[in-house]
Amino acid sequence: MRKIYCSTESGNCIIFITSMKEKIAIIINSLQTGGAEKTVALLTNRLHAELDIHLLMFNTTTIEFKIPDDVTVYQIGKPTSADAGPIDVLKLPLQAWRVKKYLENKKIGLVLSFLNRPNFIAGYLKLFGYRGKVILNERTNTSYYYTDKTIGGRLGRFLVKKLYSRADCIISNSIFSKKELHESFGLKNKIITINNGINYRDIQEKLKHITLPFEKRTGEFIFCHVGRYHPDKNQELLLNAFAKLKKENCRLLMIGKNIPLQFNSLANQLGIADKVILIDQQTDLLPYYAMADAFVLSSNVEGYPNVLLEAMACHLPIISTDCKWGPREILGPGTDYHENMKTVEFAQNGILVPVNNVVLLADSMTTLLDDDLLRKQYVANYQIALRHFDEARMLQLFEEELSTI
Image (cartoon, rainbow, N blue to C red; front, top):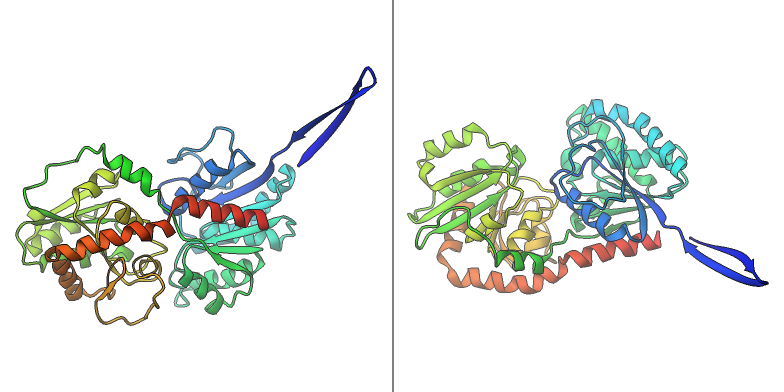
């Protein structure tokens, strides 16, 4: 917005042209570690010079990403878990009303929301008569988290259908998620896909100056897994598959938050305790990626696994379960997802295996360990694949969408 002021000095008109930043509110649960949180931080840093950004969050006390000092932070309500449970959902209308008043008071005409509760709040804004534009970002497997088998799931499905449909635009980070929103939830509004991004050049530069966290044995092969410890990640599958490998000089490195005690017990029972390294969540994963020779993802479900992009950027050949959503788009771009995959697929950028199949996962790990040419081929393919997942490209697509809304 531009304002022109005119004053006279000795009969001459002097025109001063100043600019006021357009305002945008970004709603998210928090800026703690996570893929959506990282995207918000990147967008905030990229756009703050052009836009007056207001970050609206439930948790404003723990901010783990660097954001500009001139960004306004506003707390929506008391911090709760990241997932929208039934009790949390009942609070949403009041929280949305509070957010609407804040937006109107600050004269903010554009809202960008990320994740479940923020998306519901953004939908309620339109329901309550908010006249600005609203863009929702869907970054989870919606059908999985809102199953019709539970009361909370049925309530969530109802809200997705009723509230998401009010958005001016929905951005999905997965083409299959976009398809799901159209077909399973009947949404008719505009939905576009912007995949997650990675800064490949920055990672490669940092790897040149890495100090390894521990000593690697001569000739040793290390499989790496990164992910919070949760049933959805199915790390037990990975431990059982690794136990089937008939290789002496290899180890399994597992990094994640809240390591359960039963993992140590399971490793002992499987006779692999001396080959498994369990590491708690790390702020810098690059030293551990640098230790590894291959990456394995064992999840039953994903939103869009950034760890696969990180592994690619660190030149680690990948094995992943073909779960919903994300792995296939990264490892086998342009191929169709099959609900009941039965065999191993040697995709363009990695090996895809059926979900929760210990035998085929173990076989794939053995194949990758033994086949040096296959590993080199995957790493060579990453040079081209990562162009599509370039972080700058992702941010540019966001900017373009914001400018057209």
